[in-house]
Length: 240
Image (tube, rainbow, N blue to C red; front, side, top):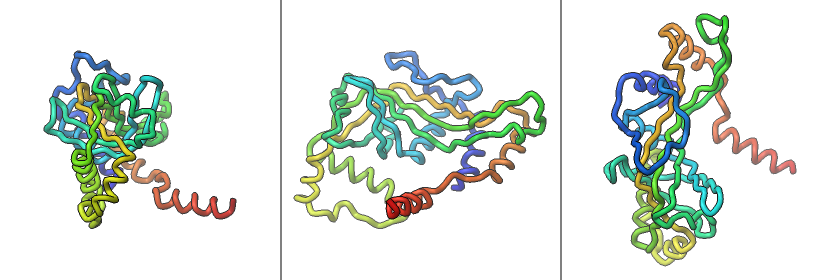
């Protein structure tokens, strides 16, 4: 789906559906969400998490650590779903996978600068930045053992191979080679205790402003794609 069309869909869905996802239990809220930007439709949040599945894994003990990784979501496991992923065994953050320490996984969606000139009335308005994020909070439990890691990796790889329409088959990798590689990683699962959605998409503005915003977003300069950024980086390296 075109990302600008997706942005429009989020703006509409945010005011159409509500399903409670925030609790007042053990997990503390991790970000400030004004009421107009609060998204509580669990299906929408899960859809978002599955599409934007390259995340920031944040832990604070024994020190603040942030790791950037792909994950997969099991929607049916636990009250709000369970997230699965893995990191290098050499990463100090693996010390937080003890079943007691809390982690926050941040899913980031489309974002962009919003010029005051994009509204129907341009007096007494200021620039802003629109974006969509979901934070999932819970305890981090380790996933170890070749069988368990193999299942975790198989589902993670299948998710993205399916999304890209490619045909890599992880099951065809030689077991001895695969097991050697798995010795260098540690898996984790995080059962979500608190699910927070913040979509700042101008949904509290007038219908005329929303239509103008969508039009201007369609005309706005798009950020570089991964291909464009990678090509530029290669070129820079070649000249170093």
